[in-house]
Amino acid sequence: MELTQKRCVPCEGGVPALDAKQAAQLQSQVPGWQVQAGNRVLHRHLKFGSFADNMAFISRMAWLAEAEGHHPDFCVHYNQLDLSLTTHAIGGLSENDFILAAKLDQLV
Image 1 (cartoon, rainbow, N blue to C red):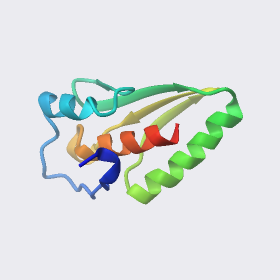
Image 2: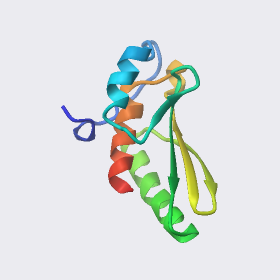
Image 3: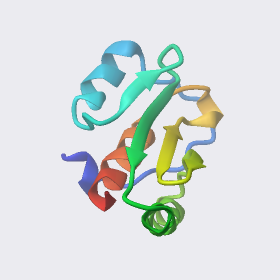
């Protein structure tokens, strides 16, 4: 099943983070994203036409993240945005991170 067709599921810990091979398989479905920090973070850098465009995307992102129950870390630099996804409860990446990344790609 395509990542955009899945839903994030609550993660309270107690499950292992994805290993490098699993993360690489899922990362191939979200090509604009890079696995970083020793396989613990999924990152993407975006550039928009203006600050207002950036803020409009962040608003759409917030609604999507809330609906999925999985929230990115992000840093705004005028018309640029750095996004990081990780599953804090397990200290690494889960399928949720890739699901949200794929859905965020649809908003860009």
